[in-house]
Image (cartoon, rainbow, N blue to C red; front, top):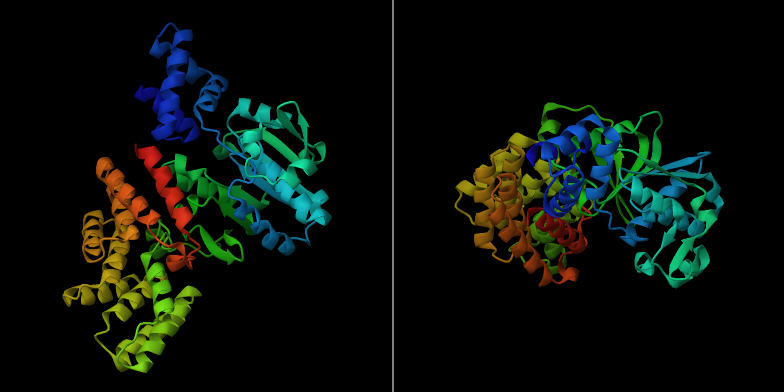
Length: 459
């Protein structure tokens, strides 16, 4: 029922695809029974009654959550809280809080590790599902929702009642729960910390940009934004700047003005560049080269890249090309990668063109070229680039991932699924110690989770 899908999308922004499509079809069948299987009658009632429409949307949204999901992201608070101790109140927003596991996990972590500021935090949890929020307010949970919670935490902050665990009133105290569509949330205040995890994957690019705009309006210049592992891949730099803390990646609102170049970068340059993987290989293996100076400069450039100092890295690679070895095409590829990060679009294109015209089969050059072509909207050429990268390095999970990414953008769903599955299969065969952690903060698990979500949506 396409008209109903469009109505839901205009109201909530949800894509009726993948696992949500299954829920949609099941709930639609049940709701139609109430209206004599008259689709038009149901549609008219939903259009005329916003509360009824909200109830329908609530029933089709997926609400799988548990306490301390992706525990490492709660450890980010250990780095953030010391920067906020000067504030009288620390305001935290949990977007898509579902059954309350996330906001309550934030409260527990704060009480456990920062008891001195526990009374200074306000945690606002919001969700579009009215019924699931009723469960969250009760605070009763089956053991399944505590499967990743340590026994010491359970014993300290929960009380067992028959088969359920009731969260203590002390933990519920700083948490307020509200039923609201995030895009309709009033912008009367800003937050110090925003959790927006595993939320973006249910929306298309247009709606995601609206979500970013909304987050920006709810943020001050020093608001810390924590996206989900898979969501991180979708965050564009013209909205937010990345901060690499000890326990992972957070984002801050990027207050610098937009310009024509930045607007081209709607997709994040940091999303899983295989060059980061090759960087790690180079540092570990330190391949022997003809000249010691060349090898040392290359290693220095790689180390600067790992520290995300693209200007100094560019200087090292330029030094190799200008003063030592003008035909070191790998150095030129990494230099092009630096230019791409520094948003020197024309320099990137010129250098990549020079490498590819040399008939040198340089794997990294095709990866950089493919990314640049994605940013330019030249998907056909990007696909060609990634396929050539696969030809050179068939076991590159990243090249296969990028191939699937472009195929998905071009609506070649079956091909995209095959490419994503190939990437996921290759990931299983990789030794994490060889290729992770990456400078961009992307881990093997993040990429695997992201591909898993993609496959759920596309299948």
